Image 1 (cartoon, one colour):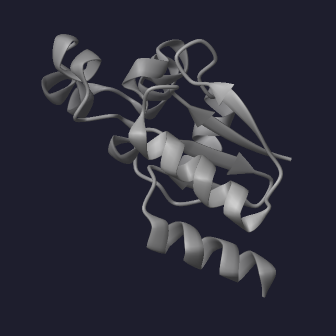
Image 2 (image 1 turned 90 degrees about the vertical axis):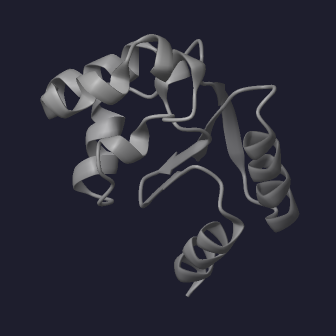
Length: 121
């Protein structure tokens, strides 16, 4: 089953849920602030699905600014970055949809549509 890491007041998260509901896709919602993805899930995003470390951070978020991540991120190792992300869900770009053969970060309807079309092909 797919896991949708989401934040309840996030517009992009609500749009992602509506998108998945309209497709009839089964998924479980996981509250990202309380239960962020694990280090292993983030590593899968990086190594299996080709995301960069920066793409996993919510660069427009308040926590990102408070922690001065723009300055800090370039100096972090991959291990340090994913450990930080997995310890603070408010640093994470949302929503994140994860499954055995799928990882989508942030909601862009065209990208999500293409990913689901590819899965069905």
